[in-house]
Length: 101
Length: 180
Image (cartoon, rainbow over all chains, first blue to last red; front, side):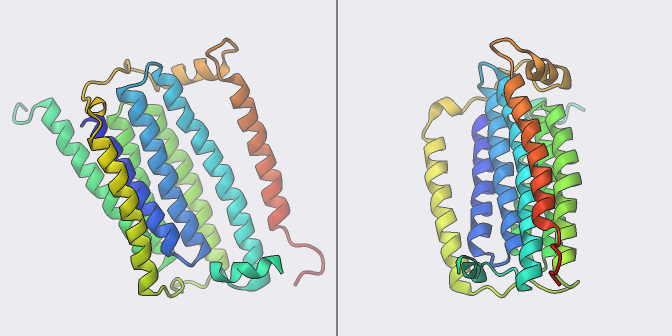
């Protein structure tokens, strides 16, 4: 297990997340894909902190902040999803363009 | 137990965990039913927690299980159940859309992997981190110290952000009078 292996694993997961965000039409499905991308970013932080960082604790601490911000983001996004479903009875992102009218 | 050396054992474990994570992530993306994809996401997050344990970040593994597999997934499952009828599949996706999305993400992957492989500095197997670099006590000491290496101000900002998020989420999701 080298740093290179971990970084390539993180990139593969990030690419899978990008694929999901681009191909899903359902809003909750897109949010799940964004979770995978953020998870890949966290793996990147931790593996750099473990293998190469001069100050490993600071590097690992950053991913704690990422986790906290992710939890906030999910709470807000799911509140928006519930409101949108109540008004439009659909979670198709193609219909989101009606919002500005 | 001298059949496998330690380095070989950790390599085998890494590839096993990586295969599980990639497989469940792809299953998450491809699942027709959103509830299924949320369940696959739990397995992907548990795989990440095992990877953190292999990188000796025990507290991170615990936080991963508690926050993601315990908190965020429950959020997602509740929202799926609130906003759709059980067993209803996701919206229909056309094949060209899937293909173009796959091409874009593969192009990204190719560029990044090529960059990483061509950088010899990144091919290190011996960690520089001391043991216990991500333990609860070292995190707590850094988060709460007010010295030049402390993180007390970001910690306070995050706590404020969590409070604001709580209030905002309730405000956005509540029913106004006269609505339905």
